[in-house]
Image (cartoon, rainbow, N blue to C red):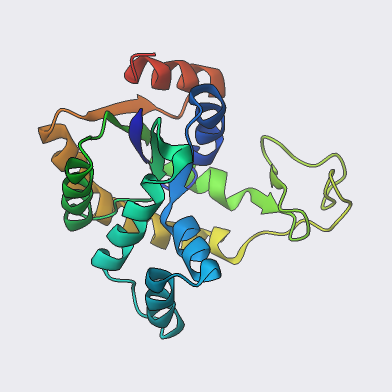
Length: 214
């Protein structure tokens, strides 16, 4: 099963990827992860990507696609994968299609988790994290047992700098601008399924499974 998971920050992609990984036995692949892994390995593409990253420039699509080609050819992706945060643009989507075609395969489904903007803002601005153990909380829906203290390690939980309302609104604006063309692109290919992510976890999970024909 080869999937692209679309959705704005805060829509629940990470939460729903977790059960899909366990249930379908396929890895979640994000651009950030493959960049970090390639840089850590010191591969040729990783070294090239690091030059762009160190200079503050965007890593070009051809480098990203090269890294993606290597990653989806790995043994753990033999049965499929969940792409998260990639593609972000039409050229990347076209490049991904060509890459998969060269490997004799194609995407099975593109699932967009749709959540109203005001709910996304609420979810993200109420999110808190533990810098020490990376545990994530929500002051409205999943607060720690003791205010400001991590349940797991006892560290002090904080609001990430990119979870302030001003930053959240900016991030959502960028996402909406980038993603709208992808929605039309994958609709035209009859690959897109949109699920309501504003419902509870179980209801959204059932909707995703239905969209995957599972």
